[in-house]
Image 1 (cartoon, rainbow over the protein chains, first blue to last red):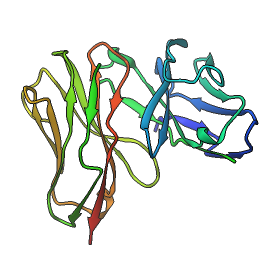
Image 2 (image 1 turned 90 degrees about the horizontal axis):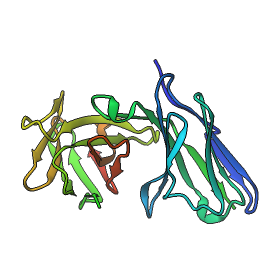
Image 3 (image 1 turned 90 degrees about the vertical axis):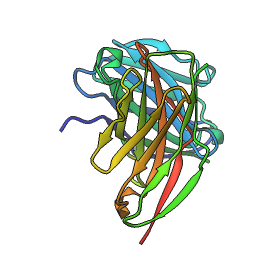
Length: 116
Length: 114
């Protein structure tokens, strides 16, 4: 049963610290998405990749957030320095993009980040 | 820009009854996809049902069905015979054809009353 995995599931850190979240997309999927979910803003797209190339990171605060795909099996989202307003659940999703008949994105379980 | 609006932040339904969740969207495109995702307390996002805009027939998945009104840009989800396990946040979502991205609404929290 293929699924997207994310680590860590929970992270508590102090303001100013670096946070790295990792995602392993489903093998063979060529698109990877990072979302942030908060009560106020709902589900926001931060960045996405197709074939490991970043295509859109307009939703991401550029000064402190960075997203990369070092290889096809790993996507990372870093926050440096972290701030209390970054507290949220961060989801990774993967899919086959618009080449897949039904455009489905498969979500990971999320990383709950708390910045104190 | 495309937008997705869910006007009901919360809803409640009695177990075994039927409930309809509303969704409207705004787009100038004619070819697109619409989705309903479910997020239970476990946080896992699960695709419930999808609809291709070029199909006139409403999609159905077991107890879940949609009412797709293309001209009105309306896409409601009907859950029949509600079960306790249906309690979750439900997100309506839109994707333009040949675009990887999905745009989500703010969600509707559904409570099932025993």
